[in-house]
Length: 505
Image 1 (cartoon, one colour):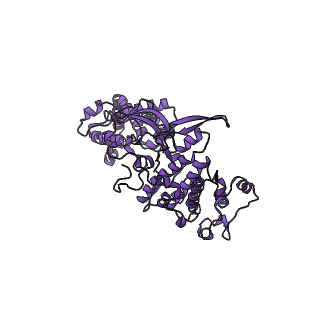
Image 2: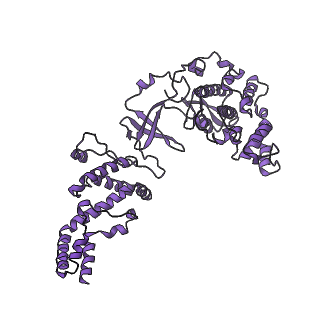
Image 3: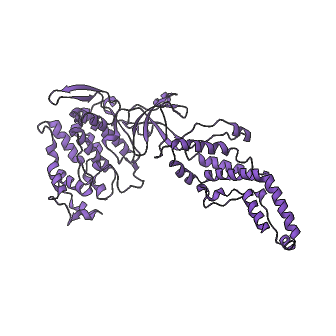
């Protein structure tokens, strides 16, 4: 019994058993340094198996070792727990996200301040393994957006331990980089203010501390009417793209102006530039797939204000209608995989809804919907349901062609080749009362300019992609006749462009 009690006491003094309750150490085996492992040989145990003197001397030796190495063993165990927390990045990251930001900062600082000295208590035999492990850990940490240090490949071990640390980099709960005005990225871009936020990222205004004249000299400004990417870089796992500073989107300006429609001449200019920009994509075998007013930005959104006495309100009028097309994240080359569903709902072509396959004509449909919205101030297809969307199309443009209905994979929407739609339902009543044929939306049917606009829109909203008007044909339409002899600086250089000019430069 004395031997069993001594053995249990020695185990408690030599091993830190807290890892049994430590969340980060579950399902993990404790491995001691190689030089600390002890092995028993079967022959020795058999030879001394019946010797009581042998067991007493062995117990005294264990007690002596446990007193001498107690502090050393506790340090090894503590160091093991710190390393186990760092090793399991998935568990650590999920656990830290549930803590407060202050707790996360101190926790991460502690991890990385200790990591460079983690091999101090290892034996000489295990030092090389620990050094390689530390380098591998630093490489993995650089992808977790935490604090990390960058070393030169020629630095010695002492230089690495004493080198300056990089500034702390943290993310919020949604994975966005936490930043503040005045922060400098890449020692070049100083953050000024937040401009907006999208589904997958944020947009901030920055000041280029180095200037970008050398980039500007490589491109004729606005020659393609697409936004220019001036620079890109990976900032602690966050992909950052630098663009020209632009104004509001045509949608935001419309919303800020109480959805007051743009004047016809502004509709003409914006639409012509949009056709030029999208044509450039199509010439390079690209389909944008996400054309909408939010992705069309004014170069400058400065405006004049006039007072409308009849409506008793101020009305804005943008001074310069030059635009740039943005957001090529969903742009797809002809040879790439085509997703089944593309485009934002209100600007989605019928072939996409019916899953008949799509190509560049789906962009033309979207442009037609945008032109209608600029003219009227509201969306043409205000719905969030496929069947109702198709019913609106039939109400505005006429019946869906029979052959499209028969080819569609969405046969549930049709009955004997015709749209299965109950006009007596609440949805049917809504469509009947709020949607009307396209030509009835013309504000001034007697004016040729208005009629030409809706003639062009009707051709862009043709059901069948093969019969839909192309963008080169759109640019030759009578509605755009005032721009046939325009200069590149005012209407975009659609006709005479350098074919070797790349998309991003």
